[in-house]
Image (cartoon, rainbow, N blue to C red; front, side, top):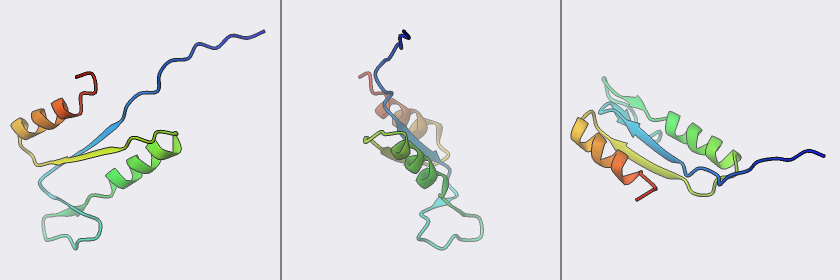
Length: 76
């Protein structure tokens, strides 16, 4: 007989950072790129069976990034 140790599934937050990011539906400007990675990561989270999908955006600003990471801290 086998025994399996299980634990609670992790909570997942996807944070996209970069002042150059635009939504996939937008046409990027000369120094911009589409934020396609977030959609892919959220799809993988869904495939892993996680219902809670959180998505935040932040620019290349250390203070804003710090605030968003703190928001994503599920232990609070």
